[in-house]
Image (cartoon, rainbow, N blue to C red):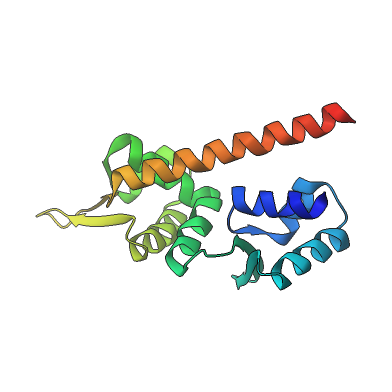
Length: 164
Protein backbone atom coordinates (compact mmCIF):
# COMPACT_ATOMS: atom_id res chain seq x y z
CA UNK A 1 0.00 0.00 0.00
CA UNK A 2 2.72 2.53 0.98
CA UNK A 3 4.84 1.61 -2.04
CA UNK A 4 1.95 2.22 -4.43
CA UNK A 5 1.13 5.45 -2.60
CA UNK A 6 4.74 6.64 -2.86
CA UNK A 7 4.80 5.89 -6.60
CA UNK A 8 1.51 7.73 -7.10
CA UNK A 9 2.71 10.77 -5.18
CA UNK A 10 5.93 10.89 -7.23
CA UNK A 11 3.79 10.78 -10.39
CA UNK A 12 1.60 13.60 -9.05
CA UNK A 13 4.56 15.70 -7.88
CA UNK A 14 7.55 14.96 -10.09
CA UNK A 15 10.61 16.40 -8.39
CA UNK A 16 9.28 15.96 -4.87
CA UNK A 17 12.11 15.53 -2.40
CA UNK A 18 12.38 12.61 -0.04
CA UNK A 19 11.55 14.53 3.16
CA UNK A 20 8.47 16.12 1.60
CA UNK A 21 7.29 12.70 0.39
CA UNK A 22 7.76 11.38 3.91
CA UNK A 23 5.67 14.22 5.37
CA UNK A 24 2.91 13.82 2.78
CA UNK A 25 2.77 10.05 3.29
CA UNK A 26 2.82 10.54 7.07
CA UNK A 27 5.19 7.60 7.54
CA UNK A 28 8.60 7.34 9.16
CA UNK A 29 11.59 8.49 7.15
CA UNK A 30 13.04 4.95 7.10
CA UNK A 31 9.78 3.50 5.78
CA UNK A 32 9.60 6.14 3.07
CA UNK A 33 13.24 5.60 2.11
CA UNK A 34 12.70 1.82 2.01
CA UNK A 35 9.82 2.16 -0.48
CA UNK A 36 11.67 4.76 -2.56
CA UNK A 37 14.76 2.54 -2.74
CA UNK A 38 12.62 -0.41 -3.91
CA UNK A 39 10.82 1.74 -6.49
CA UNK A 40 14.16 3.05 -7.77
CA UNK A 41 15.68 -0.44 -7.91
CA UNK A 42 12.71 -1.73 -9.93
CA UNK A 43 12.97 1.24 -12.34
CA UNK A 44 9.55 2.67 -11.47
CA UNK A 45 11.00 5.99 -10.33
CA UNK A 46 14.27 7.86 -10.88
CA UNK A 47 16.17 9.66 -8.13
CA UNK A 48 18.43 12.65 -8.77
CA UNK A 49 20.37 14.77 -6.31
CA UNK A 50 19.72 18.44 -7.11
CA UNK A 51 20.84 21.34 -4.94
CA UNK A 52 21.61 18.95 -2.09
CA UNK A 53 18.20 17.29 -2.14
CA UNK A 54 17.24 13.88 -3.42
CA UNK A 55 14.43 14.54 -5.87
CA UNK A 56 12.13 11.82 -7.16
CA UNK A 57 10.69 11.55 -10.66
CA UNK A 58 8.56 9.01 -12.51
CA UNK A 59 10.55 6.81 -14.89
CA UNK A 60 10.99 8.47 -18.29
CA UNK A 61 11.20 12.09 -17.14
CA UNK A 62 13.85 13.81 -19.31
CA UNK A 63 16.35 16.50 -18.27
CA UNK A 64 14.35 19.63 -19.21
CA UNK A 65 11.12 18.24 -17.76
CA UNK A 66 12.99 17.60 -14.51
CA UNK A 67 14.35 21.14 -14.39
CA UNK A 68 10.96 22.71 -15.18
CA UNK A 69 9.28 20.59 -12.53
CA UNK A 70 11.91 21.57 -9.96
CA UNK A 71 11.18 25.23 -10.77
CA UNK A 72 7.44 24.68 -10.29
CA UNK A 73 8.07 23.11 -6.89
CA UNK A 74 9.90 26.26 -5.84
CA UNK A 75 7.42 28.74 -4.36
CA UNK A 76 9.35 31.87 -5.42
CA UNK A 77 9.71 30.75 -9.05
CA UNK A 78 6.06 29.77 -9.18
CA UNK A 79 5.04 33.22 -7.83
CA UNK A 80 7.14 34.92 -10.52
CA UNK A 81 5.60 32.79 -13.28
CA UNK A 82 2.09 33.55 -11.97
CA UNK A 83 2.85 37.29 -11.83
CA UNK A 84 4.07 37.24 -15.44
CA UNK A 85 1.11 35.12 -16.45
CA UNK A 86 -1.27 37.70 -15.00
CA UNK A 87 0.43 40.95 -15.98
CA UNK A 88 2.24 39.99 -19.17
CA UNK A 89 5.40 42.08 -19.04
CA UNK A 90 7.03 43.30 -15.83
CA UNK A 91 10.37 44.67 -14.73
CA UNK A 92 12.31 43.39 -11.75
CA UNK A 93 10.72 45.99 -9.44
CA UNK A 94 7.23 45.17 -10.72
CA UNK A 95 7.74 41.46 -10.15
CA UNK A 96 9.11 42.18 -6.69
CA UNK A 97 6.08 44.31 -5.84
CA UNK A 98 3.62 41.80 -7.29
CA UNK A 99 5.11 38.77 -5.51
CA UNK A 100 6.42 40.34 -2.31
CA UNK A 101 9.86 38.87 -3.01
CA UNK A 102 13.09 40.86 -2.64
CA UNK A 103 14.54 42.15 -5.93
CA UNK A 104 17.68 40.03 -5.46
CA UNK A 105 15.54 36.89 -5.14
CA UNK A 106 13.57 37.86 -8.25
CA UNK A 107 16.82 38.36 -10.20
CA UNK A 108 18.15 34.98 -9.14
CA UNK A 109 14.97 33.14 -10.11
CA UNK A 110 14.51 35.08 -13.35
CA UNK A 111 17.94 33.86 -14.52
CA UNK A 112 16.93 30.25 -13.90
CA UNK A 113 13.63 30.78 -15.70
CA UNK A 114 15.46 32.41 -18.63
CA UNK A 115 17.96 29.54 -18.83
CA UNK A 116 15.06 27.09 -19.09
CA UNK A 117 13.44 29.16 -21.84
CA UNK A 118 10.32 29.96 -19.83
CA UNK A 119 10.98 33.71 -19.57
CA UNK A 120 12.56 36.14 -22.02
CA UNK A 121 14.16 39.50 -21.34
CA UNK A 122 13.29 42.65 -23.25
CA UNK A 123 15.35 45.84 -23.07
CA UNK A 124 13.75 49.17 -23.98
CA UNK A 125 15.54 51.94 -25.85
CA UNK A 126 16.15 53.59 -22.48
CA UNK A 127 17.95 50.44 -21.28
CA UNK A 128 15.19 49.30 -18.90
CA UNK A 129 14.82 45.52 -18.71
CA UNK A 130 11.46 43.80 -18.53
CA UNK A 131 10.48 40.15 -18.59
CA UNK A 132 7.68 38.17 -20.17
CA UNK A 133 6.79 34.54 -20.61
CA UNK A 134 8.37 32.82 -23.58
CA UNK A 135 5.56 30.26 -24.02
CA UNK A 136 2.50 31.64 -22.25
CA UNK A 137 0.24 28.65 -22.99
CA UNK A 138 2.87 26.13 -21.84
CA UNK A 139 3.41 27.95 -18.54
CA UNK A 140 -0.35 28.32 -17.96
CA UNK A 141 -0.76 24.57 -18.51
CA UNK A 142 2.18 23.70 -16.24
CA UNK A 143 0.79 25.83 -13.41
CA UNK A 144 -2.75 24.47 -13.91
CA UNK A 145 -1.42 20.89 -13.77
CA UNK A 146 0.60 21.69 -10.66
CA UNK A 147 -2.43 23.16 -8.89
CA UNK A 148 -4.66 20.25 -9.94
CA UNK A 149 -2.12 17.77 -8.56
CA UNK A 150 -1.89 19.78 -5.36
CA UNK A 151 -5.66 19.59 -4.93
CA UNK A 152 -5.66 15.84 -5.64
CA UNK A 153 -3.02 15.32 -2.96
CA UNK A 154 -4.98 17.42 -0.47
CA UNK A 155 -8.12 15.38 -1.21
CA UNK A 156 -6.19 12.13 -0.69
CA UNK A 157 -4.88 13.33 2.66
CA UNK A 158 -8.40 14.32 3.69
CA UNK A 159 -9.68 10.87 2.71
CA UNK A 160 -6.86 9.25 4.72
CA UNK A 161 -7.85 11.32 7.77
CA UNK A 162 -11.52 10.52 7.24
CA UNK A 163 -10.77 6.76 7.21
CA UNK A 164 -8.91 7.14 10.49
